Image (cartoon, rainbow, N blue to C red; front, side, top):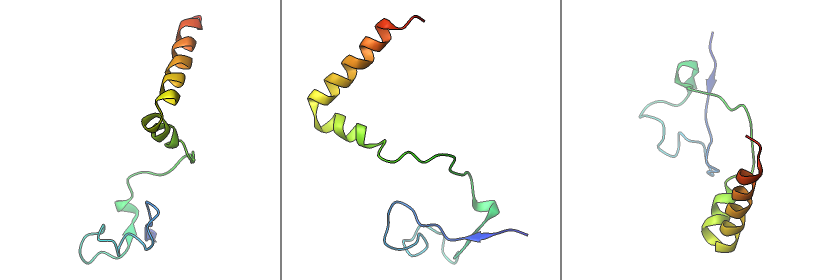
Length: 75
């Protein structure tokens, strides 16, 4: 006894089967198609990468703080 699911990812308007991600003729996924599961959700964690690429001052400040922490730790 398994389960069947339809995925919807990447903030798309429709589900993934209408976006051409599923193979031809496959409408539902079952347990053998699932390769992993989500164990945590951390929203906006990718924003730090975007901020570092867009703002040089943020990148320098963050690297300075990380460097300071490396130099001041005991181990």
